[in-house]
Image (cartoon, rainbow, N blue to C red; front, side, top):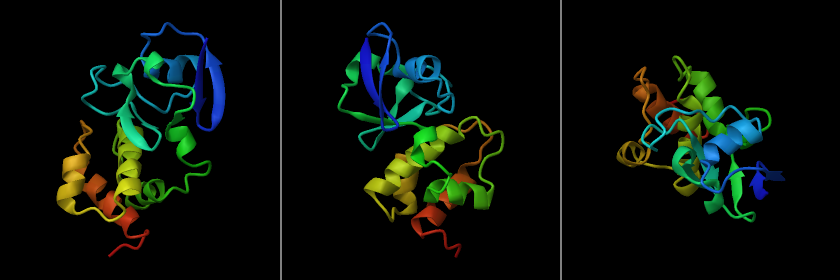
Length: 153
């Protein structure tokens, strides 16, 4: 059995040590908001937080996460979608198809937690998630809105 602190709840899951964290989150824990995109940690659809840092869960073996590390998925970011990034996404209608957006939100939330007022260059450098629909300008605007405390300027 593997013990994980997932969205504030310690869970025991049965998985092989080399199973990607993404599959444990989706299949064993039943949290399907974290998406499978590329499987090689390039697209970012599988982004979760581990101790506040954005990580790509599709290529991380579950055995590399210790029981004391805190994993947060999109379902655990806020109970009522009140996180500033989630509110900005809704206000600006950021997603198009939405498939990549949970990963985008998680990456953006981690960036703002580490750097509450990033420059446009810092946002472009740090948010490397891929969006097939090309909503990058809306993602950028959403991050800026969240950084400004939800005050559209």
